[in-house]
Image (cartoon, rainbow, N blue to C red; front, side, top):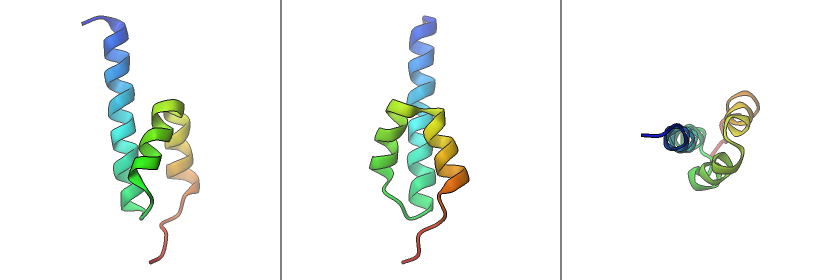
Length: 56
């Protein structure tokens, strides 16, 4: 396995984790998954630090 494929696997795993966190906060998992594909760790920071759980 090359370094590039390992990087892609890690980035994809992070996107899946972010989708799970978003769903736990009653937010759209697919939207956060797609944001994470493009913005990676920055999306994680925003999701964890600035997004409260939605009511309802």
